[in-house]
Amino acid sequence: MDEKKLAIIATKGTLDWGYPPFILASTAAALGYATEIFFTFYGLQLLKKDLSHLRVSPLGNPAMPMPVPMPTLMMVLPGMEGMATSMMKSKMKAKGVASLEELRELCMEAEVRMVACQMTVDLFEFDTADFIDGIELGGAASFFEFAGESDITLFI
Amino acid sequence: MVQEDKVLDARGLNCPLPILRTKKALGELTAGQVLKVVATDPGAVKDFEAFAKQTKNPLLEHAEAGGEFIFFIQKA
Image (cartoon, rainbow over all chains, first blue to last red; front, side, top):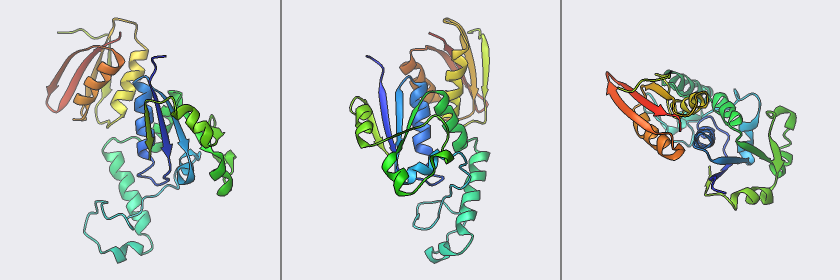
């Protein structure tokens, strides 16, 4: 078989870190890769139907560009996370960056296989009814079944 | 000058949307037909070359004018 394969593990559930798995998976699919994303731990948040709860935090995130330099202590103040999140969202919109929902939808259209880690779904007591349709549940062994044959494997 | 069969306006869109929309638009063409894409993302130049190479849809021509990047891609 000459079809290339890409396996991604998505472990992060913040607004910023939600992007790389969906950008890479949708692009790889457009280039003809068979693509699978395995969502585990906080990455499971990316499978929820509603993604409006995803946030980006300036706390512990010193590389995040801020309009004015702020001391770390300020970052713990109420409202800072919400402010950073809405700032990032409006910036993305202004720059023509797709929303996470749109990229995820493009992944689904391109038949990117999405697998939710069963163990962490149970651990965090996620209700799979909150997840989008068309995903599967699986474990580490099922990830390797695909990753073992993949040309590229990424841990994000 | 290459004559296009379809035009895709990808202006104002950022990575990876121009490529994803291009892939979709090419899917609606038949082999040999030409898609013209207009983009404003400066990263598109490298991306379209890479896309054409990997998907084997030839990039017939590309040009830049007034901050816009124009690509002619033929469906393989």
